[in-house]
Image 1 (cartoon, rainbow, N blue to C red):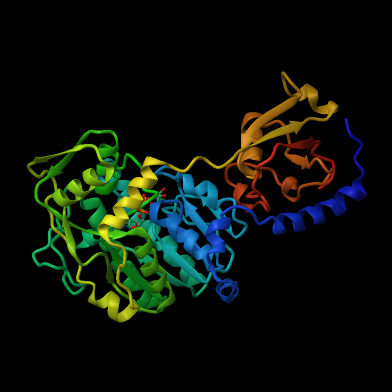
Image 2 (image 1 turned 180 degrees about the horizontal axis):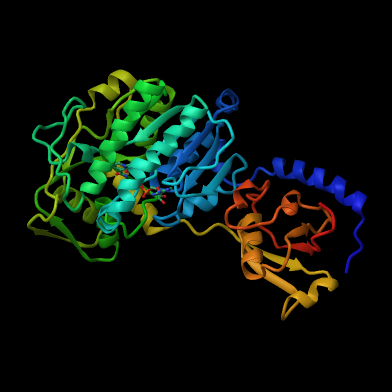
Length: 446
Ligand SMILES: NC(=O)c1ccc[n+]([C@@H]2O[C@H](COP(=O)([O-])OP(=O)(O)OC[C@H]3O[C@@H](n4cnc5c(N)ncnc54)[C@H](O)[C@@H]3O)[C@@H](O)[C@H]2O)c1
């Protein structure tokens, strides 16, 4: 067992806190693209993003980090975990809070902006979980609006083109009120989004909250979760596997590349426009043409046509005049370019972030508390991941830890559990090399 000097421990705790703040690694590519001046300009910006671990959310987090903002993503991870999240978690201005936003969030840090993206989406999630979907649009929206209200922050809320339902007019401008079935299989999603819009407008009228509603049409690009059956991801997956691409009916979709979409989201954040504003590609693409383009780009797969079921035959195309006038926004990526980038990303998915081997060194006096080897070991991408593993597998050990340089890590005087992990400082410190952390008795140091 090592000898521990309490005075050394106390100063080491301060030093470690400073080191942690300076440990800026990961996502270097993302940040280095940004001109230095821009990073300085937005240095005080702090954006909370519900659904920040999702497809659009991870791109948005990366874009906001690039311009120098602090970003807190609040996500239940119900849709799964994207590889991009591991990269984001290595950024010192990024924090992930695992939380279901249908429950109020105990949040006390000022934010300058809120982006409410959390929602189940895609037929696989919405048809199987209509209640969860409605709760995300109702309770989730109210909880996000309350955070914006508390900090007088701008809030942008992601609605959907589904609010137009099966539209009787083409293209849809924001003044069209839609044609929605309130009780159909996908109604949970459309009605959740209609409630989101109504509540955002109500908070603006009654509480003067600076709300902005955007209506995305179909967004696609690298980083879509496989298996959620959204049309572009489903087609690319099928083509890569050499399978059939099944075209149901003769529907037309507005397909917007994710980078263009995120530019529009940020333009909305930077404005005071109330919306709703359509964000999408003005030119519609038939599902059949999309399938042919995917097969051509991938070089494998076959297109099969069948009669439409559910709403797959619906044609929706936005009038994006308002986005141009109010936000100065229009998509710039061509569909072939966007599909090429998507296919490339899905063909070569990002390797998982490097994980370090973490050894936990147990002082002799504590060995009796655990069975087996005194050397506990796990693999983890962050300190938080390692500590969580320790407390999950050996709850009897108090996580008071020393680094190999006998530095007391500052979060160690807090008991770790599922609910308070997010309060801890330095947990997102990336671990790329093997490291040993010594577990201390509960009464020592800290
Ligand atoms: N991608 C599109 O084509 C599209 C089109 C129209 C609207 N939208 C809207 O944009 C937003 C983002 O879409 P996306 O494509 O990134 O979807 P996504 O499923 O990839 O991301 C949504 C994220 O929200 C999280 N989430 C769901 N319910 C939650 C809850 N109760 N609490 C906390 N987190 C929760 C999920 O875990 C997921 O990470 C959604 O609101 C969606 O309705 C997207």
